[in-house]
Length: 159
Image (cartoon, rainbow, N blue to C red; front, side, top):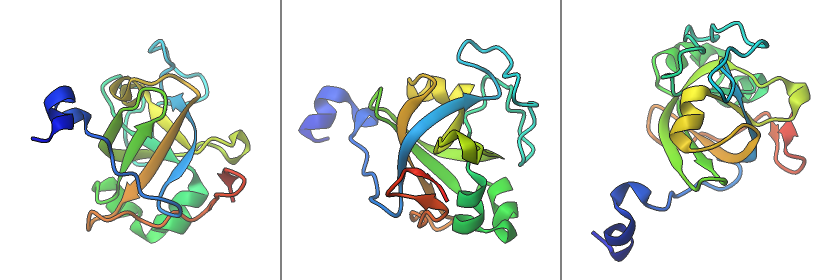
């Protein structure tokens, strides 16, 4: 155990966040349930990959369709369902990082400008709030970061 872990504990270690083009920083929003655990009227509760997004215990995320298509590819959506692609998310608000987060849906919509949507359970796990700034990165089946495509890093928006 190093000096940092002796003070803060092993779970509070500073994350190693991959740089561009392997991570995206931007606004994160909540979906499925709102921040007060009430049904999100804009979400039907069923994720594109079969998850119940209104389950308050679900720790999951949703990535923009262009990011999913260009970074992972539609031909690999079966691997997303089998949790071969997972996401790590770092909150700039709480300083916490959650890892091994499944991709449970497609979105946020392009017009929102948001980089990621989080389920109620993910927001609670990361100690965040709606419309917070987060950095995320995708880990492939080999455990290595996937190059993010479909995101304009210079304008912080979906391509």
